[in-house]
Image (cartoon, rainbow, N blue to C red; front, top):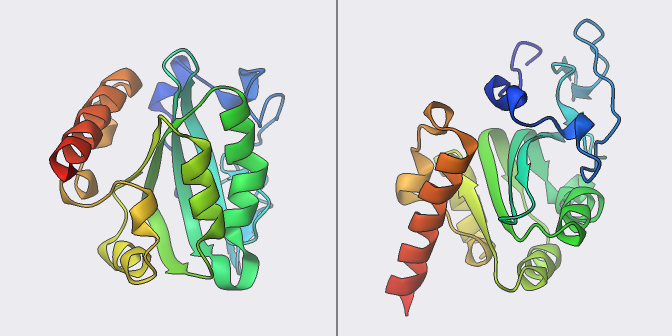
Length: 191
């Protein structure tokens, strides 16, 4: 896992460590010292520790005027043993909501497993972003099935085209507009 880096092509447009509104403002990164691990596997030092021992992230882009952010995850999303959703919600999401973010694009192609607990933090997150949405982009099929089995998928938009999107070929603003279009199409057809 040490060679899986967070996506870095947008770094000329946004870096969380240089953004005073980011929860990672002022962080300094090493290219050579590998200190964080998921179980016994070291991960690339560019990933951000959100406070979980199994789930790490990178805030790839935040646009406060439009109210959206793009987050890439890596690891195992484990609510059963480590209450990862509580940690993610309290340490990262609440901070971003306080800064005006209400639309979240969560990229999960490097999330290997999901273990559920209850849905209270998902429900809270959903309620905290009244006019916004949460999009789960490119999660593995078995992880989405686990979300659905636990009825957590009711709190976000996922699957279909959102599960096969070639997001790396887009600029962040283009990605946001395409995802926003998909989200509103789904919401409009649901009613």
